Image 1 (cartoon, one colour):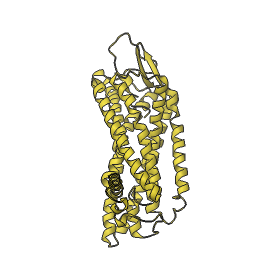
Image 2: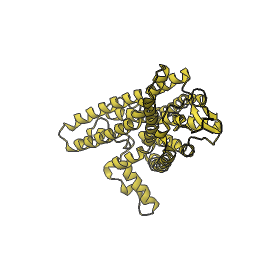
Image 3: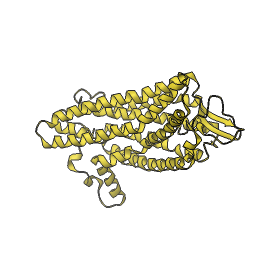
Length: 366
């Protein structure tokens, strides 16, 4: 997804003197989007405020804890929160544009740059989520063999590789997204009639959704199997940890699927239909355009979901957040607000059932 308004060129501007730019046909019934200039800006600003506050909170809480205890998984959490934070800072521009019926008043350079930022952070967001899944798999299932892969140096290298890869994958937005003028109206749009760009869109869907989703499912499937294996040993505490871990797994995978699956399905249909020159009926095209707009908004919501998951499902994150809040109020020592069994040294207990259960939590000691 290269910009919130990538499908808004479907608008009919109710003027016979306006001609569509080459390659940007109007295919959606304007009545379908008649109120989008009202609800889209509101939604974008809600995501903006929630994303900024939530991800800043994560950066402060995890960053503070990371400095004191240096946990590897915190590096991925911090990068993921930063990627989401950078993304949401572009939303006010698109909110204003949507409120002006897709009029882009910020110039061609900002059109390209803001679209590029969204693309880069879209890719980095999904890749960091995948890295976190692999890290959890190594920590729980392959603990004895994963010391080298889970070293600080390797994690920093992985984060750098994710950012470089995301910067490269976002480059097509700089080339194929630009300001298009129709009379007095200017819109920030992408050219989906380019065969090369169509191929790039499908490739990025494969690389940034299908493959990551496959990796995530395989990792968490193995984690669930391992946790269930330990829960059958008759110890009640591993069984409780197993149920809690399964809840976190289900929530993360569900949030990922609900956020991204609809958009990728609609986008794939749109691109494949253009590549095959399929002549769609008007109502089908209208439904496709409307589905793209709604599903893209749903995908943007994912940028402010992760802080809520940490807060409501991860007790270690809650303890850290409470400790910082209490410290800021000057009411006590942060360390006293951590339960004794949630504090551990930087080395992980190799092979123990208890450590494996504790290692699953996204922000637990690892």
